[in-house]
Length: 156
Image 1: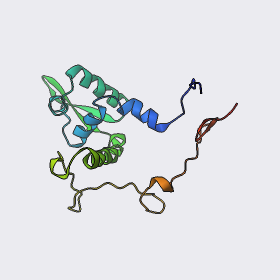
Image 2: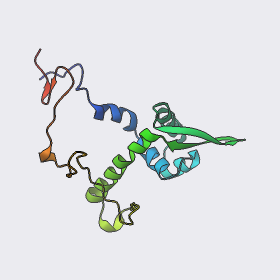
Image 3: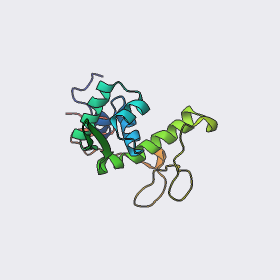
Image 4: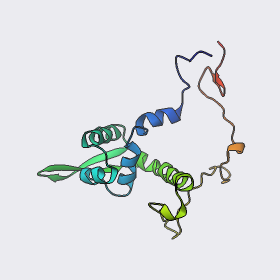
């Protein structure tokens, strides 16, 4: 089968175009942890300074982070998540939980997140309507993009 000129319209692909670049999710992790100063980000992420500056600029331009001066001389900035950035935090928690389950053992997890209730956070995706946990076998896709079906582009 020949490759399609235009790939499937997809919010996942659109989101990854923004936050899927190397270091972008780690920037968001650090900023959500309260480490929003450039030097903190460089130290905690290990990204080259020029690449980190590019990622920060892109996340600010996209409305995921805000940039605020905390020093005038020398001029220094701090980054904080916007509402859009905070909406990505559950994604980070779910990625962390997946990594803990599949890439680590119980005794080598680098961080545990505690919920306000006092218990360790174990993220679970649930249906907003019924509250049931989301399971693959309970889902069905309904493409909304014209000319697309679940299996790919519809015949012209």
